[in-house]
Length: 400
Image (cartoon, rainbow, N blue to C red; front, side, top):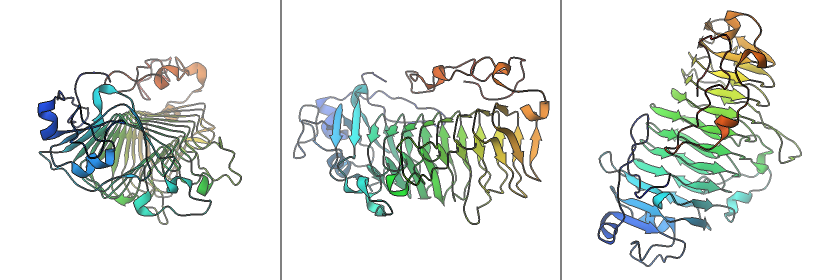
């Protein structure tokens, strides 16, 4: 979004943009400016900017803003964030006045970990964060050993990020992490050569716990493993108004391909923890496996007003024995199988409950182009008022 201010705050459910002009008087006190032609010995003002995002991160205090000028920042070490803001004074990191900022991890050694190798924890992520009360927005993060890796993070807001072509998941949140908002994320074409496609997802919230994490308005596509992965995350997550498509195909010609290919993977583990994740108002289509799967999660999943289309396996795969998922007003169109339900699943008002044939001619449009196009000025999903909307007027499925 191009404007004359740096965004400084976010509200639950939507990004709240607050005008904060960058001037010479205010920059020295509360704003650190970074530019590709700057110097890390400079004061970090608009006319004398810093050179690296890391130097600004190291200097930032609660309440400060880091404003990054446009350009590509080729990393030789990942950006590591360990200082926290506070509830009343979060730390803000974002692009200056809508300029395009690319953080490129191609030169990081961990980006090229060999097959079978392990990425050291501290080297995970072009942006590695172990801190709380940050507001990070409008950055493009590419070619990293993970794009964003957030472990032990609380009450952060990540808005309008683009994470793509990374060598692991585009965005991963794990560990003891709670109260985070991931808003209007685009994460695509992420892959993991070291695992032949086994684990690089668009967005992974897994291997941890913490309440209050929310995903809203994400698009997760053409990733080598899953679009969204909840493997072994033991606390409920809310995912809404999110789209996952084209995941799980071997676009990189890995020799022993291991990608799963689910749109939304809502659990997993041995044993999988029982967790009541919520998925609503979302769509999953043309994935290599399931549109939505419980992946062995026996918890009380709440799946409401979601749409699946043309997935190679099942639209809604929630057949874990004893699983207590509740499915309401969901739509499956031309999936290999519409739904696989467990013995304790509650299913009402879904397309398979209504009966009839649900194929491409049953909906107004199967053209995803409007939904996959340019986002609105505020970063929200573009309008797609006809996509997977039933011709017969049935009030089921997602609306965009």
